[in-house]
Image 1 (spheres, helix red, strand yellow):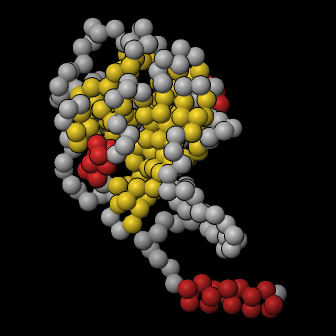
Image 2 (image 1 turned 90 degrees about the vertical axis):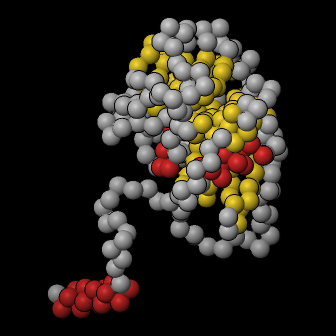
Image 3 (image 1 turned 30 degrees about the horizontal axis):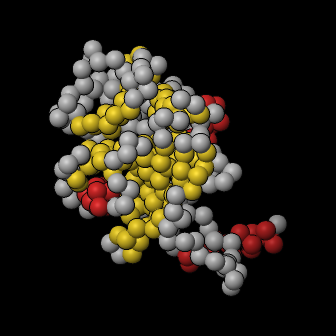
Length: 279
């Protein structure tokens, strides 16, 4: 018993000596680990990842690319999945009562690619319009934000709701809204408010060839203005882009043996956008 007390006393003294930072959440808080703890130094012969992998074929109609992008104070990693809508179909996943990890969404749907969706409230309900299998739920943004839409014929589009508002009568098979618009055709970067907030970011874009881009930046490096500026000036040939619900929701999965990607959200997701095999 005396030995146990002595051991506890030494442990208490060690903890007190290390100090306790009240700005950190308690150990019981259900928060994810932002960065894994290093397990040791990499081998001296380890090869650093390339600054740009280039486009790698992940599946029919799907290419994947990782690149390092200059940002204030250094550089950050960005992952992009480029998807040909002629070979892949899109579906909105929505489960406000039973949010899932992005891996679970991917496995359950058989998706080739999955990305987090738009913003949701504390109950998991979308704060904007969603359309799944022709059925609409939620309320459209007015005068702001953007809408990614798939027609019953499978034609995809991405437009500013300030320029072309949502019409409840327009036929849509699938649709997802985000905020704010980052890039517009012929206008380039359109989000110019600088708030200095750097966060994990995710975005949805169309390039000038009509391909869909799922974009994720997993480190808290971009402000929204910086993201818009980079997208417009990059070699991704972005025609239009809208911001998705980033931060802890940021996630991107590419199911592929040849060119996989797995960026995990820190929270279960009630809304996702899925790219499925087949036209």
